[in-house]
Every structure is written in structure tokens, then in C-alpha cells.
Amino acid sequence: MQMTKKRPQAIRTRHGWALSVLQEAGAIHECEEHGWAKDRADPHAREHALDIARQEPPDGLSPDQAVTEVREVLDSIGDTCPECD
Image (cartoon, rainbow, N blue to C red; front, side, top):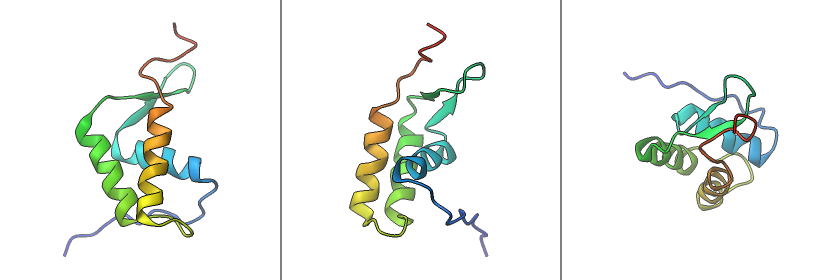
């Protein structure tokens, strides 16, 4: 039987939840020096994040709303750190 890691349900905000899903899927990572989220531009990781959102939406969000939230957060993240430029 395959074991799955259960994500803690102490979700703070929708934005925070979406960031954690994107990071868990490997779609984003933090700038090592400044901590800003950066897009990895990995289509497989993005799709994995959307799958997680569809399958495990937080309380109060439908699967479609969860996917929309993840997409909106991902669209707001660039591939460079604003402080490193």
C-alpha cells in the first residue's frame, strides 16, 4: 500500500495555502539570499500543483476555486528575485 503525506489542515490564507501547494509540487522555490518566491518554469511541477489543488482543496473552496487560486498565485510570481536584479 502506498503511503501519502498528509498536509496539515491549519491553513492560514488562500494565498498561503496556494504557495505551500506550489512549493510542495516543486513549481516554485525561494531565493536563497532574500526569501522571495521564484517560478521554476517547470510545466510538470505546475501541473502537479494543479492536481493537488483539484484533489485536496482546503475547506471552503471547491476544486475549481482551488485551481484558480493556485493559478493566480503562480501568475503573480516571477522567475527572478526583485532584490537580486
